[in-house]
Image 1 (spheres, rainbow, N blue to C red):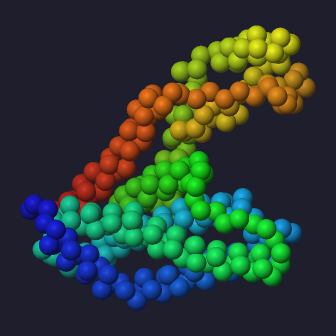
Image 2 (image 1 turned 120 degrees about the vertical axis):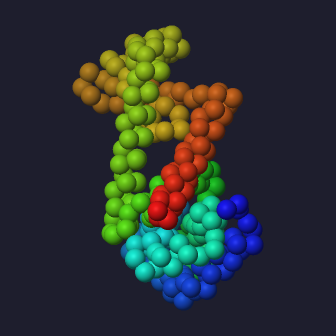
Image 3 (image 1 turned 90 degrees about the vertical axis):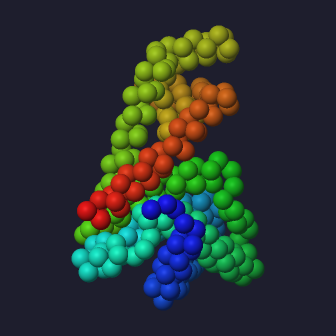
Length: 284
């Protein structure tokens, strides 16, 4: 069956109609939780709901709530009767996946961020006008915003696969799957660092001695090497303390970084393919 925008639109409207009340209640609950947490931070913290706290809050809240929503997008396949009804719908698996992607990757973050900005505007008004704290509103800019969107896309693609892969305790099993994926990526990143950057400590120490004309630290260690970010080297003394002014950053040129960004974009497509294969398996 070929992809049809008419059937796609039909399935999208059906999904909205069947879960309209649940979505509205979830939006109200999400806004209530946001306001409670934000006001709690405003009235319990010395300087109110600070900019750094806003970054931490929106990062954790968006990723966790998004993963929870994505893990429930295919709940009908967990029940035998609902699974049969869903399979009998005159739509293709590609259309089912497209509707799920639309909800999980586009509609949910738009609704979440809309609620977030409404809540943070209310809280910030009280924070500034009533309590006198001068805290700016985090607008998802800078490197933090880019890293958040990248992480959100990866987590959502894994959560979407978990939604169709597991039939019971979907969210819990999906979180375990996400954690295992993150551990694998972090472990692979460390291995790649050691393979690509051979004898990095000696090279950085030699560069430090050449530039500063001073005795370099006893050894250098990588202290910042998360995926898709610059590597940071810092010198340590013989007593194990990091030395101020001895840090260096290693970054790839933009044209080389483009290759890794393209590879990153292919990862969700791989999970989409596996999800589509599992959807086809449901019909067997």
